Amino acid sequence: MSRTAIAAMTAYTLELREAATKLNQNENPFDFPPELKRTLVNAIVERRWNRYPDFESNALRGAIAKAYGLAPENILVGNGSNELLAAAIGTFVGPNTPTIIPRPSFSLYEKLVTVAGGAIVNVDVDPRHAHLPLAEMIDAASANEHAVVIVCSPNNPTGGILPPGGVERLLDTGATLLFDRAYGDFANDSLPLLHERLVTFSTFSKAWGLAGLRIGWLAATAGTAREVRKVKLPYSLNIVSEAAAVLALENRAIRDKNVSVLVRERERLAAAMRGIRRIEVFPSAANFISFRTERPAKAIFDELCARGILIRDISGYFGLANCLRVSVGTAEENDQFVAVLKEIA
Image: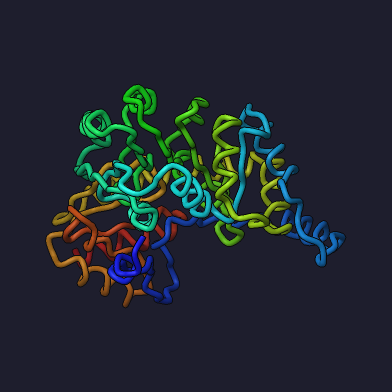
């Protein structure tokens, strides 16, 4: 890729603002239990910090494989799923590789594909629909030989999901599918099948509530995982993060309870928002809700921030003019947000 193309890109950024109620980054509002944090710290104190972590992260890969009915050779772990996405895109996308990406979606996909020299083929998403445009994606994949498809389901920032059977139908086109299920736990999805042209990405940041520790993993056939491993950076997961993820998997009931609460709160929050005049609420299967306002989105965003509530202004995304996104928080945070939104919408 040329330096000129890099110079033309913009960096992935997030406006830094402080607020008492933080609902802007799709974080889990429930922290990891203090007693488990102490267990983790005690275990880490016994480890030697002057030694590199296990090169293969065998303990975590084994724990993930056991939890999801896979084999360790099907798993790679890294410093957040973003690192693994970068490695997979570097593996499968080269100069002029046609790469189908719904838009709007997670902006990092297009940046990574651009760096790899791929040819981006966008498929437009209507945020008012609960499902992503599968038929249009299939048409685009079928029309482009050796295509790569990158899909986030539920989609960030709109909240829509692939229709049932969508993964299989995309694979039937002959394309390689990079499937990001960062928010899949909130949609009650299941890990997709293993297939030589499929890589599935998951994270401990959302449902598991470990965003601060940056832990991601991917699932693929053993052969595909070996190819991605050639591109992935070594030693990218530290001993603290690896031990925390293993501990979380040993206490899955905590994650299950939090997901159950957040899904209930999402539905309650969406119902309350639909009762507010002058806003249009989009369907979401994730832990966030996006909506369009009649008033300028920036004005709503600023007024909420002035009241101590920080959400995300997504009005700059393709097709999302005058749109905002709010993460599902605790019941108290959601009630506070709705009360203020009613006043200012």
